[in-house]
Image 1 (cartoon, each protein chain N blue to C red):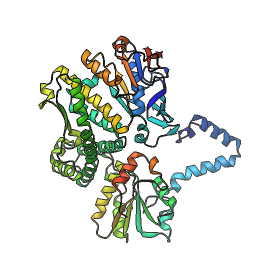
Image 2 (tube, rainbow over the protein chains, first blue to last red):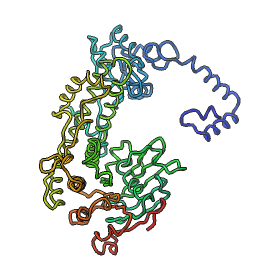
Image 3 (cartoon, each protein chain N blue to C red):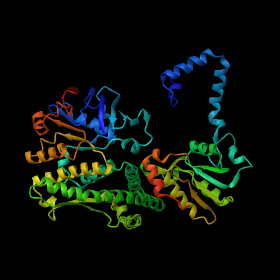
Image 4 (tube, chains in turn green, red):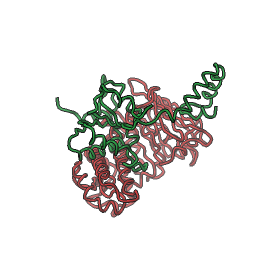
Length: 189
Length: 369
């Protein structure tokens, strides 16, 4: 129970429920679960190319021949990768940085997966990089830093996710900070 | 906008408090240390989400409790909303009509408040940071959308300073990035401050002439760290200052060094002002803030006065009360005092009978009518 309670979002009461549930089921369930858990760190690793989760040397997304390898989407972490993947809008490859720059928190460029990004862009025929970091100070700083690194390479186009009013958003209900930014960053029609 | 119902639980020394405030005047009477200021601060939390006296979250929660909470029903005249603020050791959260507010700026725009404490009387004499705080708080009360820009600026500045302090030679490319961010956010901060002062200056000048018998001419002007308010000018200044910033391990140019200059009849108040002139100046700043809010928002702000009457002389106290009671102001007021006799003579006759005033007594963290 103590181990279960260490999981995020699981308190003592939920941990107790889980433990009793497992006890009440056939022993095979507990055994299956245990087996999966003990194999977790050997079976799941980071993709050698994009640092997404993978069960082999490369992840499923990198191995998928239907995906367009000339376009790269750079994300902070796995939740962001999943969010973009869910939109179905992007059919290229990803690059997971596993963090954002923040001198305040002591995180510099050396802590991110940057050398492999530059290597990929140089060695493979990447023509476009989309910087899909968050719109907060850390995400913006990271995007700007990566953009400056990439601008030293000749052939690649770099873009940044747009920010502003959400789809179907009623202007009246958009929070004022977002709206103010959307007004400032307006585009010509 | 008025507080129609107020509930507080475990905020600082306050236990469970439930008030039905009067729509106009609310006198909070209590001896020192009983919780008057804490009560005002709990109300302030609904508009700012942070206390007006700087403190850690842990100090805001009553000893032995895990959460402090303030709930209010706001009456805007054409409908009611509920606001709920919760403070725990880890976080402060706010709900509007039972829904968690996604951004603080959105939630805090619900009710505009102005607070006036004895510490404010030192604004003109004290450090430049106190004057910037006055200005930024006034900007944010009028335009909650500015909050995001101020926070971004502070965050970007913190990152740049951390980079300058980090051991070893700072990465120039990374410094470029933070110069860019500080400049972009800093220009917006400068823009908000200028935009506010443009509107504030004439209202302030009128208020000062009104409360000083001699009709003093006073001005408050922004003395910016960088003369030109553009992003490019700020960026250029940061780039130029880089060697010096490296040596000092801190950002030496930018809106964090702006100064708000106070002058009286063309002379700097700080060196030439008498005690009475300083007080008149601060009083006029507060009155101007209130009037500007009322004019721009089209509704009177809620006023929180923390035992200010004891710090002002009779003449200035009367001037303040005239502003609150007079034709031009109809907003809700919460005044704390050690003795109601300091306050009651200034209120119009019959306000208690007409339900326009209420008196509460605060003792040892509990409030009674």
